[in-house]
Structures are given as structure tokens and as C-alpha cells.
Length: 143
Length: 128
Image 1: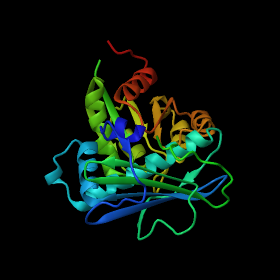
Image 2: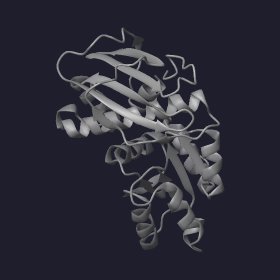
Image 3: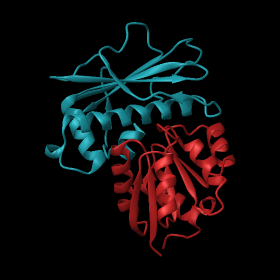
């Protein structure tokens, strides 16, 4: 994922099973978007991975970061990935993205696209769903 | 020539990240001033000399669009180049922001050199 490489300084990412889960606590961040079409994107990762990503993003020592700061950075990542996916899928369309929110579930219905990469401490899973399924999203659009 | 840059974003994490990227980019900067929304930015721009503004669009109280409109109506502040830094890199959005007065547009994700080039282009300098 370009966002991870360019802004979180994470390299050599490999795709992994979307249904795999990180050990311990996982956080699911959801970004709703309105436009044509409207929908939402979720980003899921283990808290340990989120702390590591946040430290890389901020250039700070992992031990100095609290969970709220790490989750704030995870929200930024969700926002960046959502914007990048929508831009690549339709560069002439205007979308409005809502503020990312921590949610309990990724949703039960069929996703338009789902993709995961392996971080050192578990998967980072991206799922995108639109209200109309108007577009056929490439699962790797987040790449 | 070293510059004074303002970073406008409601996310403290994003402001910290942009500071970090400015350091990594090789851009000659003497000071980074932070603002948490468009209103805060305009207040601070009236108080001090800033060479360029890097601003998000979606922010509470006053967003990037409204900030650009306000700046364009101010005889002094309209001269300060504003570069929009946004997750929304759609061509329509870019055109919309440039029509409102944005001098540059940087879509996230971006590399340090892209930020440096956008700032230098907006100010009218080049990197050695």
C-alpha cells in the first residue's frame, strides 16, 4: 500500500488472508463517504501493530505513545486509504469523507472489496462497501 | 532562503507528521507554526509573517474552503500561497480548490520531495 510505504515508512508488504486476525485487542476504524456512490471503508489491525505504525508515522519512540495517540494515527491512515481508493476509482468525482470512528464490527453484508497485508504483528485489513455496488472495485485499489 | 511555514490541520498527529516530512524533505524552514482550523490560521496569519500555508480541507469551525474564500477577500493575506493537503485528490476537487485561490494541491499519500516541490513552486524558489 502506497500510504504505508510513503507515510508510515513500512516496506516489503505481502498480501495475507483477510480473515486472519491479530492476537490481542483489534481496532476497527470506519470512514463513511458520501458521493456517487456513497459507502464506507473499514480498516482493522491489532493494537500492537497500530502502536508500531503510529510510532513510524510520528517519528517517535513506541514506548512514549499512548493508545489514544496511536488510535488517532490509525484514524488518519483509514482516512488516507479511503481517499486514495476513491480517487483512484473515480478521479473526476467529488466525495465527502466523514471523520473516522472506531466501531465494533466491519459489517455483515458482502464487501465490494476486501484486502489485507501482513504487518510484523498481524494483518492490516481493508474493506470497502458501497450502498449501490455501482462500481466494481479492484480489491487492490488500496495498493 | 529559509521559510516560515504554517500547518493547518485539526489532527495533531497529521500536524506532527507534516513537520516530520518537512524535516525529511530538505526544505529550508526556520519555523513551523501550527493552526487547528481555518479560523485559527487566519488569526495567526494576521499576527506574523508566513511564507506558505499547508492546509487540510475538512476541519471543524472553519474548513479549508472557507479559509480560502476569507483569504481571497483580504488584501494582505491573499498574497500568501496556500497548498491544500488532502486525502481527496480528485481532479474536480483540485480544480475547485485552485479556483478558490489555492496555489498548490498535494494528495495524500505523498513523499517528502513532493511536499518540498509543492512548497517551493508556490513560493517561487527551487531546491538546490
